Length: 200
Image (cartoon, rainbow, N blue to C red; front, side, top):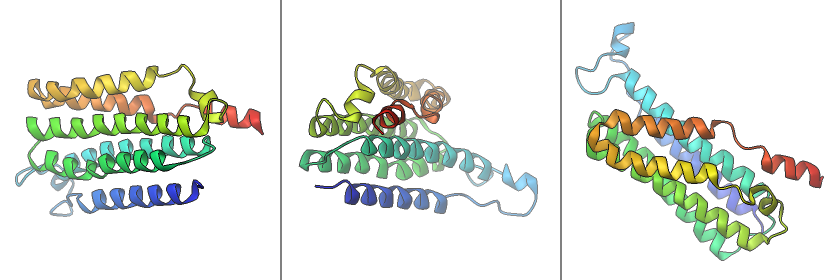
């Protein structure tokens, strides 16, 4: 079984998710700067743009790391296909919870739901990585790149898990933790690239 269809399908889903989020952006109701910050009828277009940016970056991080991980894998099988579908399911809920959170002015429950989706996306990504490791074997480039280095993934899942109950303390605290995770992953690890460069 080749990786081509899996990569193409995943890329298509991610492109659709980003498109959906763009269509949810709130446009200023006028041509002046003050309209960008007008929140008289709901979240201001500026807040809508910031929320979109956070969700866009989150999805882009998953896509980036998904690309590197598949590139370093040598084989896909049935469990990998299902693990990948499981990841795409949780990623597909990011636009939904993004819209709910901003439409409800970052209320506690929608913010907690947003954090929950991100947490489950992180867990799903780890399950996909483990499925790829099992399929590719211990001597694959992926296995050599990720061996004994789960620290960033563990910290990310821990911060996402903390963000959920902290939404009831204050949604801003919850979102701050989510932003910290995004910043942690903005620069992807070069371990996979280095392993592939050595192999070539």
